[in-house]
Length: 329
Image (cartoon, rainbow, N blue to C red):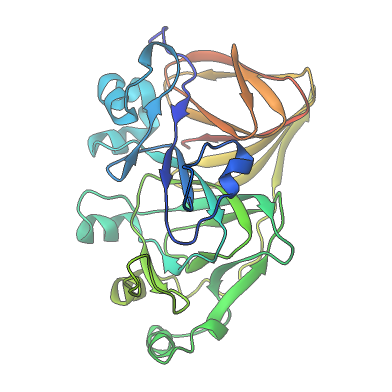
């Protein structure tokens, strides 16, 4: 085990997609003086955006460089499949959906590998940090529909009745497997945990144009290949209790082939003890309150990466704190 590893903070990478706003400033992100920012990539090792280490002896290194250096000591033996493809397994984002995102779908791994080069599919999840009144997301279809009927609905601009809308509020979470037809609508600040992929097939974009004045490209044929039309009117996910003892309450939010995410609520002054034994990295994010991971202080909203071979760690709640804990199953 590499004993000189430590909790890693990163400098975020900002993305200025047209649906963004200025609301990430409310989560402590320093934005450019002008323009809109849609996403803050918090922990990322992708060709479209790679974060740099912000603390300790690795400060200044890109996550991709650190992964090259540390290999499985960083990501863990459970991610050997990602190591074989030269991929960091996960990507953590903050999203400012100031306006609705496009209606879209992400492919599964096998389809991405066949059609998008050395790219992963994209299973993801969302945690709602802040929500405007009557905020909602789209997930799945509203009723049974065939692939061909869906195609006709797109071509005739009659898609919206077939989209399943779900009201959401702060604290809700939504699990979004690859193949899910989805859209985050306006008025939402969201933490997103996902496979390390940036492949999106856009189905419908509300008739708007991009910064160049032209409609943004759609990817209807690829989308039709991968949409799960059996995902009909899904219900909002509910947390599943894991444990509650000594001032620490753990709840399971999402579990899939790529990651597990828990919500961990810690009473002020209480601690959670864990160990990174080499099997998996852990990513902890403070979404409410203030905590310390070992001797590293964190406030809302901040994420920290614990290398897989780091060894024991302690999370201490400085105030009543809610955190997200993500690891590879």
